[in-house]
Length: 498
Image 1 (cartoon, rainbow, N blue to C red):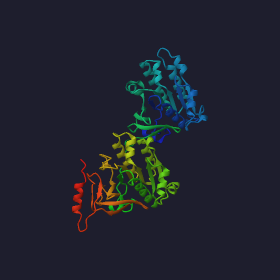
Image 2 (cartoon, rainbow, N blue to C red):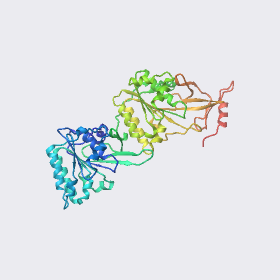
Image 3 (cartoon, rainbow, N blue to C red):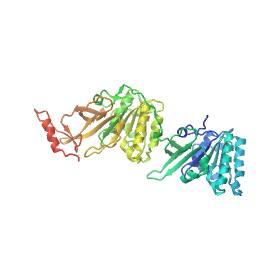
Image 4 (cartoon, rainbow, N blue to C red):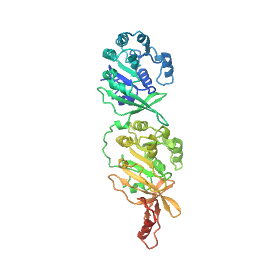
């Protein structure tokens, strides 16, 4: 079957391929959810001189106002009005309706569908027909309309401000081949719009509520990543270098290809710099990299990389590096997942950075959804054959809490970077806490930020506080001792975390 595209690739994906010729689809939603914009966007995308789109209005806004509201959208083409997209007002027919009879209106719509063979027929608003006839008459009229228009192979869209209660009992929804529900949720600081396919006959549509945004491009839809089922990717035995000097030796020779690595640490400890290390290594090897940042802007990251001698500006100019800065106030989980998914479609990107996860969790405000979302997002990246480097912030002072409670198992590798008290100075310490199916060093090592970015130094032999202490402390070993007594003294002095 040849599907009618909506003009939005991601919406076609959600619908299971697009719209089926000859089908009846109800687009329901409250005022402001995007019903009219979506319908007209589909009209202007598909209409041709040979196969028009006919847009019927009942007693909604006048055509002049309808057209004026469209002028700000990129999809709107004023030269298409008439030759390709035709507006027809049904108000006079409705005023003359009597004895619960919609037959004149139905005959008009069917006649145009059969004579002109339009690709799309829209009735906005179909719910308003309820104000003129009873339920039985409406059901018979809609059945007559849908069955007769289907012979023309035109897609019939019925728009209306239907409530969830209407969708349970309305005749429109019983007869419809597809039901698309739009929603508008008020919340601070940014309202949220959504789209859910309640029903789509003969199509494998994606479940769940998908994010919708209305921009100058029109209505944009971002599939819910949990609805996507990435295919399994065979594990590769090769390892890739992290770019952090000294870290690969602790990780058994580098990071297994396709792994998701999590770097934990407090503010200022070097997490973002480790991201720059990871990307710079990929660029030096001719790889293409994607960097997602929530805090630092593109210019800030380019300047930061420049202080270590890495020319990220040239890499961006050559399309070897893509940096996407997503302001925390604008963060939406589905939008972010779509950005990553589309960047990975050509399999050219081999390294992905997300900096940082803690901001992402806090800003998204979808705690219940986040575990399934993160699992699916990691699966999308892995299925594309890319390796993922993720940071997440922990507390600066006091014991190091686990910021991703119950989610650490999703990451193949976990590398904490912590501050350490060394007499009267504050240093840094790093260790490999976890590597799945791979041998790794269990020791703790010094860590510093130098000309080469973040780097790993010597092993620490007299360090306490990793598990359960208030802070890491480096206790000097007295001359002639092996450090045992000193470590015990540290344990007595350091308060436990109850």
